[in-house]
Image (cartoon, rainbow, N blue to C red; front, side, top):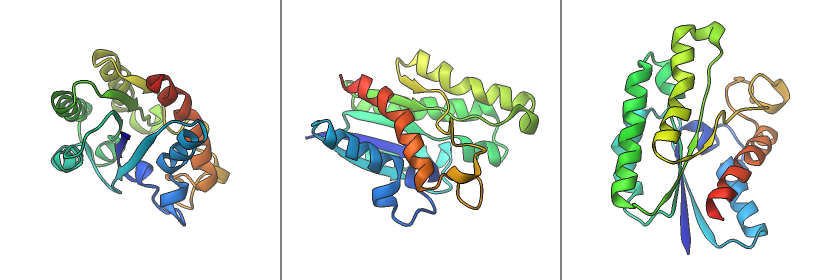
Length: 185
């Protein structure tokens, strides 16, 4: 059976959900795969609070099993901690390079993030260019903004207004599914 690895932070992990194993967007994508009759095993390698540096450090463990599709979602915690955008980009590229080296046939998907310009100014602009630039340079499918339709909408987020609720993750899964399905075709 082919393997899809979702590699990210709390947004991938399903932080704050009553049951992340069934309500996170990787779990919902798994349901969509089953409904479509596609035989894939889904691994959720989301870790709350993770950064691109942390992801790079823990990647080898997850690459110890074959990966057919690698879905990358990291970087927002780096920005929150003041990591410069070019360092984030270098770390993401290093993660991509490791995957490509170990599994050259793996399909790659980038899940982009954004921060409002009014919060970050030039840093926000630099940050927003990382994901499309890396996706283009590495021939990756791209979801430009993972939280499109969810960010800033109270009814789709937990009390912290940073993490999607179970309802919010349904919106996220609907955003990710067509891009992922296109890679599988």
